[in-house]
Image (cartoon, rainbow, N blue to C red; front, side, top):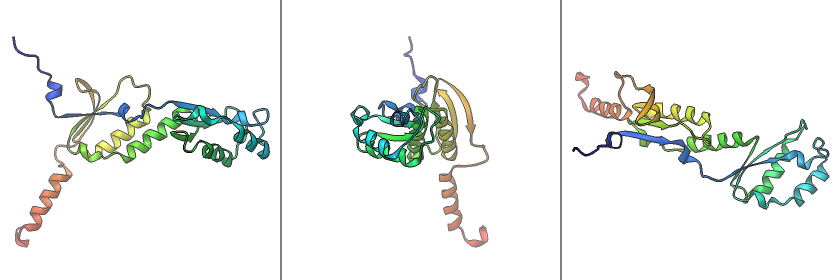
Length: 191
């Protein structure tokens, strides 16, 4: 009997699992209306007193989305004041709902990622079933991968959907650099 060979593991396919980019910390929502009079009116002195007295320890280590569930008009400085209280305690803060904070985190993480490791690679952006990864992260990953990868797919390496492929007539940046340096060394008459 022949041994079972994992062709996917032996292939040149790179897997980008966006779920691994999340730090695993909990996301908590803080409703700013708790600090407003009847949930609607912000009076600065009362607001500052409530913020000062509030027990912020429950947000320690968590990502905190600061929003308002009422139709109150909340000035920007109020969000800034609460965020300053959470500084050094919360993992991060953002204005909005849970999904807004997660989307912001993934956007920052993807913007800072070193995409060169996927240069000229066949890349599968792992999908299917993530509760953490926002759809926007997949769009951003596809945009970045299109700049470096040879081929981009979505799903699992054994069952993926093609998203983009570099046209056959184009070549990689690395190949272009080599071709350019060779051309530069040729005598001017042969160019």
